[in-house]
Image 1 (cartoon, rainbow, N blue to C red):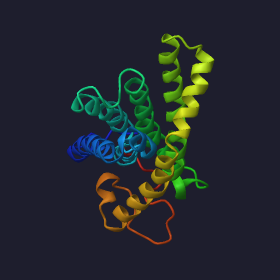
Image 2 (cartoon, rainbow, N blue to C red):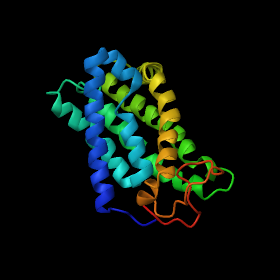
Image 3 (cartoon, rainbow, N blue to C red):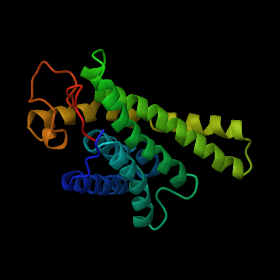
Length: 212
C-alpha cells in the first residue's frame, strides 16, 4: 500500500487533532470529567483520521491529540500518568488499526460493504484492551497486582465510555456517507466511487485500491 502523505491529508490530520483537543475541552467545561470520559470526544477525530488519511497518519493523530490536550490544559487533561499514558496508546491503536483493517475488509466481498464500521468496531475493542493493559502496568507500579489491575482498568474502560462507543459507531458512518454524497470523500480516497444509494459502506473502494 502506498503512503498518501499529501498536503490535504497532513493538514486534515492536524485539523482533526486540534478538533479533538477543542472538543475535549468543551465537554470538560460543560459536564466535567465524567461526561467527557463518557462521550470520549477525542476518539472521534482519531477514528476519522484513520479512515480518511490512512493508518500512519491515524497513528500520529492518536499520539498527538492527547498530548496536545495535556499541554493545552496545563497538565490537567488527561491526568498524568493514569490518564495520559494509556490514552496515547489507545488512540494510537484506534488510528492505525482502523486505517489498516478498513483496507483488509474492503478486499473481502463479504465485508466490503461495511468495511469502515467493522474496522472501527475492531479498533475500538483493540484500543480499549490496550488502554486496559497499559493502565494495568501503571496501577501495578503503584502497588496493585498486574492481573487485578488489568481487570479494574478493563472494566472501567468499557463501563465509562459506552456512550461514546455507541455514538462513534452511529455518527462516523453517517458523516462519511454525507461526505461521499457531497463528493468530498473522493478527495481523500481517490478510488471511492461516486455516490450511490445501493452502496453499503460510505467509504467503499474497489479491491484494487492502493491508497495509504
